[in-house]
Length: 254
Image 1 (cartoon, rainbow, N blue to C red):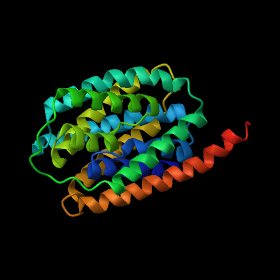
Image 2: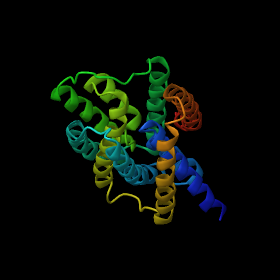
Image 3: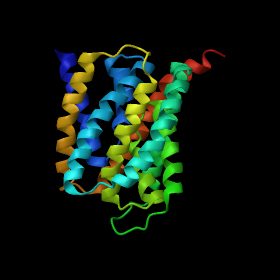
């Protein structure tokens, strides 16, 4: 019973992150599944893609009703990302579990520093920068999605604002469509891998949908820059823990 309640709490937190920030779900899901639920890194990567993909789909529906979703950019950015995610998923299977977790932690540190050091983008009319920039950005995020099991929201939102030129609110809604597309492609690339725990998936997804709805409503009362910095520090702290746990395993071999 305690494990069920813990799974529900974790799932709610992941959904809350997606609802508040338009991302962050996968970067929390993989460590939670590995260190709290007890799954292997490969199994956690696959399960993460399912959980975050379904939660993002629901979040996208919410943003669609609010008119904060750019379908043209979402389909182009997400379309090329799906192909890259599918290919990169095969590379993930060849990586040792410890190497996978260290790479994940290093990416988390880079993202956390980016969120802290970069100024908060403002909403407004920002000119688009063309389809080529959209394609290149989508390829980069898709590769990371398939390789590390991250839906990419914490990368997609900054990419859509800084590179593609979308206003911040539109970037958050659009990112959820891209996350769902990339997660689907990454999951298909992981078929044939470790079996999924359907009970864990069900609990995480159900609680995550409630969390996503709550997060979307909380954005009306909490300042975005406060959320951004708090999330950045949390991500860096979690990354330091992952490195401290996994680096000794690498050095012990030599």
